[in-house]
Image (cartoon, rainbow, N blue to C red; front, side):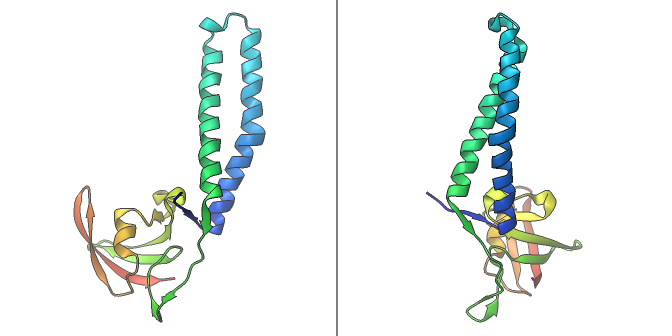
Amino acid sequence: MTPSFLTEEGYKKLQDELDTLRHQRRQEIAARLREALEGGDITENAEYEAAKNEQAFVEGRIKELEIILANARIIEPGLTTGGREVVQLGSKVTVQIDDDEAEMYTIVGAAEANPVEGKISNESPLGRAIINANPGTVVDVNTPDGKMKVKILKIE
């Protein structure tokens, strides 16, 4: 199975979510199901159906998290490869896209990606384009909106 690349923080966040789903959400849903069953005929009980749907979602998410965490490889930020500073998993990278203001991103695995938090996947178009690049490099990135030029300004 393909490894899930996670930062230490990302691993802990997913582990916390898994613990919450297993120990809190399962019990909450079980209580909702009991209440709905006490309501009588379950064939026309919307609350029962909603609880069953939520139960299915939670169980699916638990399985997904178990697989991700079982195959997790913790990434540690490093700045050098072969004696030079390069972008890699775990790197915090400041880039300039086209002529816009500089933006900082952390390169993470797909399971941890959250662009709103500035965490982009190494599998995203931008992530793939800047992996192994060093400061000063300009790369072309193909996106659904077209091509953009990205300059690596700094790696932390």
